[in-house]
Image (cartoon, rainbow, N blue to C red; front, top):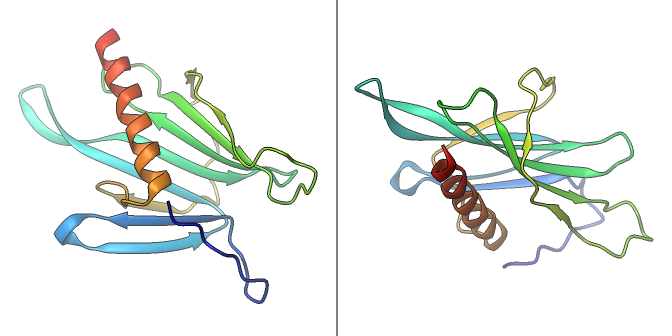
Length: 149
């Protein structure tokens, strides 16, 4: 994985997104919050459709903690399921843990206030090291959850 140096002379954003959608195109964006939705083709009721199966929500809490949540949606489920929460506290010089990872599966409230979160739609993640590991974790969790239904 590539380590990025943060320059003290320019504004630093809280999150960076990288996307490579094959021959469709690539992009990179930075922001203080982000909302990434990944859809995949499914067959339901005899018809093909695109289903938003994974959302990655990146937010900043009031105390400055940065939170990345991975939420899985399935047309057979009543509610979405959060499968990962990854936290960092870059402003806390006393913190000894760069990333806190919680892979517990929790129901995710559908009526969350998403105001101020910028949406980015992509077909799949970039090949960046963290994104690749995160995509692997998502794939494994989704496969495990789909077996249970």
